[in-house]
Length: 470
Image 1 (tube, rainbow, N blue to C red):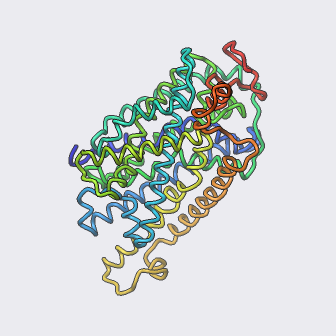
Image 2: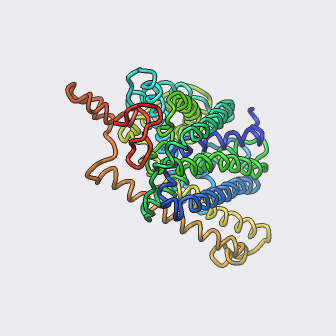
Image 3: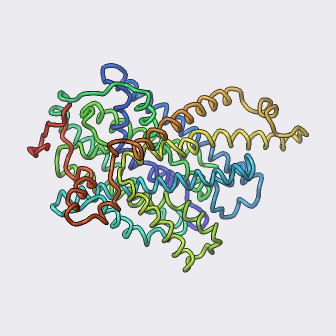
């Protein structure tokens, strides 16, 4: 596919790199929207619909932005390693281009850490289920070793097959999760309880949902690699319909059946042992392949910074090895899937998903109109009011407010829980690796993050498989 892939392969890419870690975290996110009898299910459904439509809208803006850039600047007909920052540079200048580079690659860095942690978490649970002692920290290193050779592939168009495997594994995992719900509903729902609504919890919930729908750091790269980029709309329409159809039943039914006994991953709440292991394996397969898609923009940008040739060689091997293992060891410093999801979903991701796409679209579209009309008027606020749709401006303003709300609230509380809480949510893997032998067993237990199942009920004391809850 040297000339790019078709739009339906782009659908699989978009779907494959977006679904996965957000999917298993969404039931927990729904808890933050209040009690079932008040706004839980209704509020959850409305939130999922709105938070699907907005990322879909901003994804289409990114696609159109790239079409404008290819039309106005001939250099973008060739391979571009940094399409999102280039978009920012053409819209608002060099400063915004550099800032967008920072946000994009920090988000990709964090997203790769999240997916790596989920892979390690599911792998450790599978191994423990089969009687093989393993902690999340030890399996995180195994994940890195397995993925290390694979990250040397140049760009998504050179490993498009992995997106198909990732998509099939996710759809199958969802089917098994829903089957698990059917088995557990009678035993767990009657004992479930639901927390009160709080603004802080709501911001964390929105951050998780943004992460679940927010594949935007990679979207310009996906559109760039398409054989016909003009087909971006149909690509994103099918992708987000598919995501919504998968996310909605998993998140709302999981919330309704298990209540506040749900942990940061719904997999732990499934009561049937064999079903839970099967789901874990499928999600691990998805995450393994998705990491290759997600981390690729950061790897290409690193090569660009150090002027590494695009052909495979010692330069690519060294740069990609260093960057990839920095990500893995950074994940090891905070090996808690739920906390890192909220941090990534609430910090730079709202900028890339909610704020930058409409901002850059407005600038590029107005500048294009000025050029087409041969206007002598310079680009500025008056030109925006003259050439840009007022309805679009109102919609974009709403999205900006939502984005900044989630970004400030969720980032503040995520950082506070990691660094300033009296009961920090996790121990660093480095503490485990370098602990004295007499403390190793206790530390291993604390960092494994519930390698057994999660009992349901208000007090997490209801087990449907006969296992002890304590």
